[in-house]
Length: 94
Image (cartoon, rainbow, N blue to C red; front, side, top):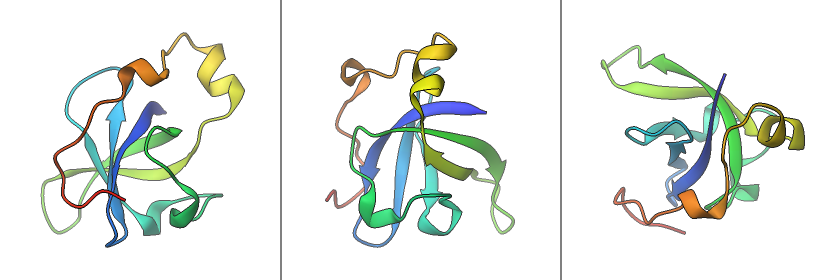
């Protein structure tokens, strides 16, 4: 399971996650959210997710996106603080 923060949310129902481990932002669509609805997410929210490939294109995408719990944030040494937030360049931000 990967950890990251919401870097960008669009009004079209998708967004990008900034991985805590670094690297390129990962695309997600509202249809892969678990235990949270898209309208409840905000830029900077800590999330967990798995990484998979799109069935139509070779792009990497997030699946099983859910809010990170305190155990997720504190228990494994990942640093999911506000210091990791930067402005994304992925379209309209809400």
